[in-house]
Image (cartoon, rainbow, N blue to C red; front, side):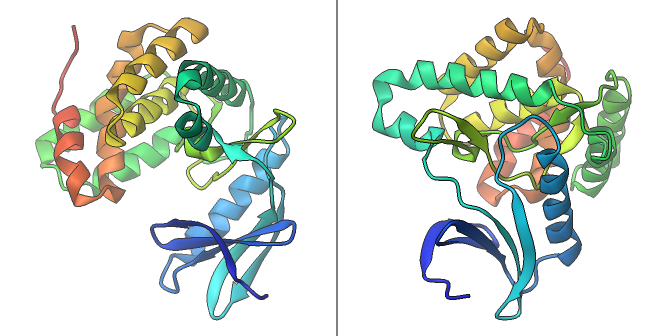
Length: 249
């Protein structure tokens, strides 16, 4: 493979385009199990009704693991929001509609969201009392089996020139409670510094899904704790403030 055209750079990975393929190359010390799990998640989601790039292979490139997928021509919703700020509310509405379609799917072989959250809480640096409260809160949340993306934000939705949306980056996909997925999207908007979009997103999600805002908010300490495990130092103070919120008005 001649990897020359970089289309995205993320922490621990670089994404290249080669003709009609996307090659996501991971750092040499990245967990092989996590890479294979991401490819497996993507393959399983291919079996749902969602539009996603198909996995074409898992290869070694210069001693590094790489996932090869279909290249999807188009712009991300994040790019469209930046280029057309006057249409941002319209794009936010589209984002929520796409997420609700994800939550309408079933994928019985995906890992369980609650199991993943329990592992993440145990791996945090919070004290034993805080971890106990988070585990207890998580255990009390209703169990669902909806497909949850786990990192759903405007940069992970590509809109093709004909308007068809494609959803990318399924490394955090699980099956579980849709409101946990919404809580993460809300926090991702906040972490990006766009609190106005975060508020509008949450209002839209709750209205369109007929979900009480308080119910999504109950997930936020749990989701913030799980996010803190992979979070940057700069994010930890913000996430910690959410973890220590006990209840909401």
